[in-house]
Image (cartoon, rainbow, N blue to C red; front, side, top):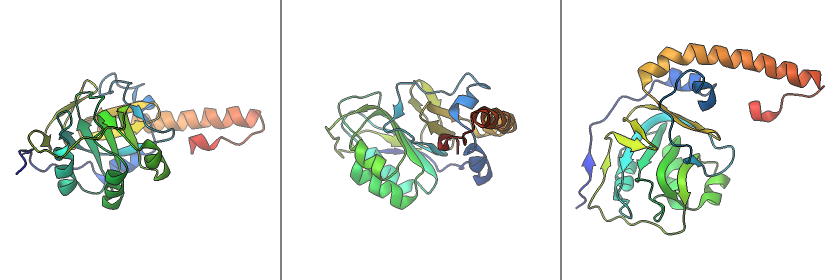
Length: 214
């Protein structure tokens, strides 16, 4: 029997707010806020990865990754698994097989303050994954320690179940839903102004706006 501490269910970020945040990026949040940003060593495992969703928090201890298996029993579509592994660089807690399950469940991504493996496979499947380290050594489902749906520390940031997760090539930011709601109009207005400048710049050069901005 696993000794996994399971917290109560939680409210997800509403779909309208999630859709709005698909139109912005962590770097624009960085013009408005100075908190909620994970250690920049937590990076996408392949270029172009992007995730937006509700944080489903997981705590694991070293090689014991059983709490992640428990998370798969409880998480739902649109959740981003946010795994606190204490920055562990030795044992991977996710890889190709878990990515199959994540995609089938409709999860929106994975953020790990620790290690993952099979990153090429994740890229081929276009599953957004952000991690501190990459390693071929894989953890085990022991079940002696761990938690799900409890507050965790990810890259120096306190993350609560249901926080909004926004991540791309530039890093990961976690937002309390109330704060995310408060600043979204400012972010979208900034996006609108930047888009005008972007179009003007490329038009001057007789070129279409690169697809990176789409």
